[in-house]
Length: 119
Image (cartoon, rainbow, N blue to C red):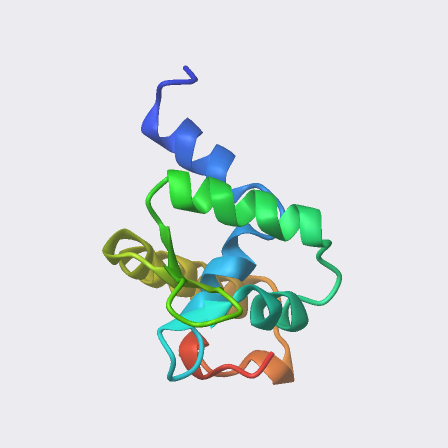
């Protein structure tokens, strides 16, 4: 497979640790944006450096948008999914459906709606 192949490129992006989990965290809940600290708190085990790297990469790829509110002090940065990022969520939930059907049965992950998931 060539590096310019679309499948190769998306596998490279989503195959990186934390990528899918970050996208899901930005999808969860009623708010469309989350602050860095909120993401860090909900992604147990991720280091600050790794979270920062993944957010920058997802932003460069057009899946996540960083918004900066410099009107108030302290300056607040928030992250949210772009239209492209929101369109990718059904791909992730499709993978979830496949794992629940064929691979990993677990009681905590019954809901197919990842946006409502508390895990």
